[in-house]
Length: 384
Ligand SMILES: *Cc1c(COP(=O)(O)O)cnc(C)c1O
Image (cartoon, rainbow, N blue to C red; front, top):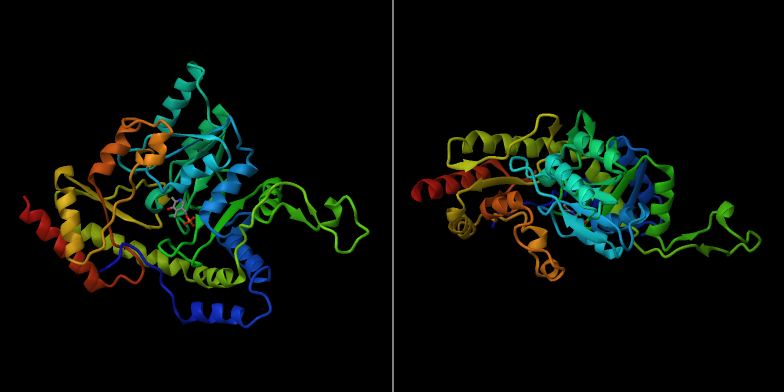
């Protein structure tokens, strides 16, 4: 089965991991600071903090921005559940903003309408909005950040799909239009650590808080301690977590980061090839907004919703690991049990009825891509 996405691991990646395994520190050594430093340089952010997953990153990003009971976090329903679960971990509530029907990203116009409506009727306004750069395409961050000023909310970019993407010629993660950006290094994502995540920010205070939350809110920094005479002394100053990344993961991360530009150009070539070979068929290819350049984590097409299921099944039978990204989050039984009703985000629901993700990853070769395109063509023309 050709998967929809997979990691690319070479001998350098393996050597980097092996070296750590033979060293003194499997965790809390120099590899994690090194990965953070390299990532800050790559995305041009002042601070990077590595964690053990993007889910952890989202959780402590919300906490660092003060999300708690009685607060609201708004996000896109077309995302992985982690994008909204993070608010619930903090005891806060979540709400969803509809997508743009062409980019499938959180729609700034829908956001403005919802904000104005909530303001007018004294309904809860968000403390934090989490735009998700779905499929690697960057959201309209400039429009969203204007709304953040006007309605006084913070922004966490969920860039789990989008490391290596650019927006207005700056790398995603630079936090030009946000407070915090988070990345995922799960193996299906653009670069991998096995499991892992990263937060970037340009705010010194946020960086400090996030570092504390990552490791139990324990500090040994003498200027922060109440007692400086005992050499063994440390203090827990809040309720934190063990969300640390290991040095084994960080070494793989550094090696993968050095390959990121190659990964992105391979993904862009595959996308270009799909665009060329799939044009003229009764499907919609992914629209790209011009102020950004996608990392192409996913290649999503939409087609007649009456044919989606049958084409999906037949592609799977032909050994092509197509997928669906995503079931709207509030369709999940857990979210239904919180009181969310179908009909909340009409564009997201229409999109969900018709989408299929085709395989895209750096090691997908030309013959495999031809096979995917040919199978899809045959099915579409046969079913006509
Ligand atoms: C994968 C993903 C996450 C969670 O990432 P993990 O590193 O697996 O915790 C969060 N948000 C989105 C949009 C994702 O695709």
